Length: 121
Image (tube, rainbow, N blue to C red; front, side, top):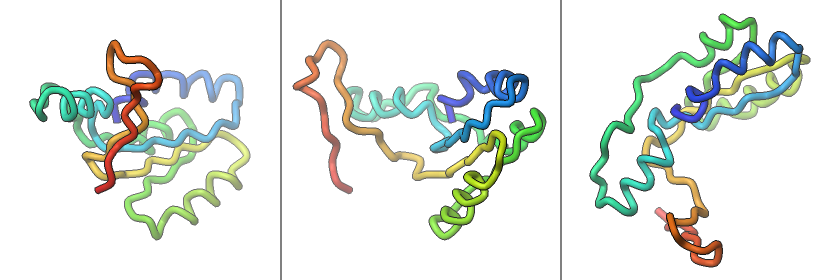
């Protein structure tokens, strides 16, 4: 997912200072907000937003951080329990629908009272 790839180097900081943070990745394999803008404001003309599937749990392990990849809803409870019970840092890589949007959002140049609330699927 694009958001974690922009700051994944902070796993080093987490380990160096023994910060017991739980990292939750909502992984749709896109630069999600950019894709969402292209969907809503540019007639779905997607450009350079799709990302390859990355093994974020493997990357976390390289830093010495435990983690779990969650592929289906029936795995959520067990994954959350593992994260909570782990004393140190933990990564949860939730694979979500590739076109799941994030709302509310405020379009460029709009006021906060002009936010878009989203649509039900």
